[in-house]
Image 1 (cartoon, rainbow, N blue to C red):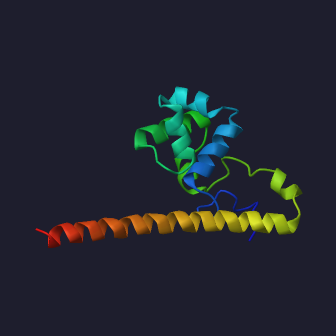
Image 2: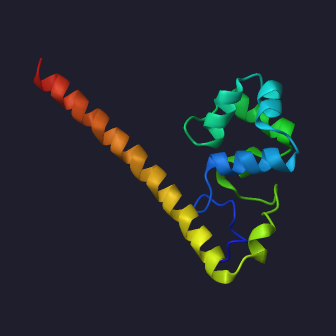
Length: 131
């Protein structure tokens, strides 16, 4: 896998990863961007940590402020932000480990979302059974 070519793809990076990269590329702190978007710094942190996601109107604002396309911010497709150069200076074995960590984190998030859905279905089934 060519991590440089696919650095911000959906398989290797999350929305939060791309948001943080775009913010850093724009030379802003979380606090600066949060203030410009009109949200709390903790909200921005949650977006970058993939704990929460912004609504559509905030996405458009983020794209405008950061100078990235909505497509790139959501999927990583396009050349809006260049991949970090530090990784290319790392030994190949470390680069491979970093790539694998990104894949595992993405898979973990998907599994966590799936688990949450199953828990909700179970709670709903229990509620219906007790009626």
